[in-house]
Length: 251
Image (cartoon, rainbow, N blue to C red):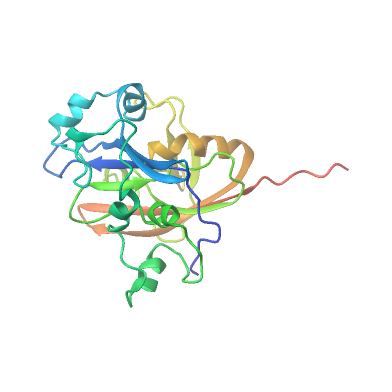
């Protein structure tokens, strides 16, 4: 049975993420920029200072540069204007997804569990697909709205490659448990993903803080949507469903 996204997230902003090529040992997905709106108009700016450190586990921009990062091609890192980039911002990122006029666009949406009749804003489309391309390490991550009551989304289980090497295997439809992992020495805000009592990975750290809040005040369900990738680099994707918490009825 296919589960469709009934309530897509409507993001207020998206975080631009970059991951170094496979030849670089450090596989951190770096948060490098923020796509949002100012006065109703799209705006993109690179992260720096405390904002950068907070979203990158305390690491410095120098570590990012040493990993080979030189900025997003459409926005010259060395010519960053005060107040961020304002021209052709949305168009630059929408070039990362197929045109809606393409004959196979409906199949593209179905891959992300979106029905053709579902209305998506440009930011929502970028959020649900993460605007990934096989040719570079960039993607867009929705940090999610903590106040949302109903949300459906698909997310990649971070670290699944590492845990699958321990023979922690899963299949489409397997139920998952999400749990705050306060003892995580690398990231105190981490949320672990378990299947059949075994850890298989974590929630993207840029979404984990919102997920931790939802776990305390929403009804959260999660299961494996698909498992793919090569044998040496498997990937697992989870379908997350968030609904209002059920209230107990007094006797």
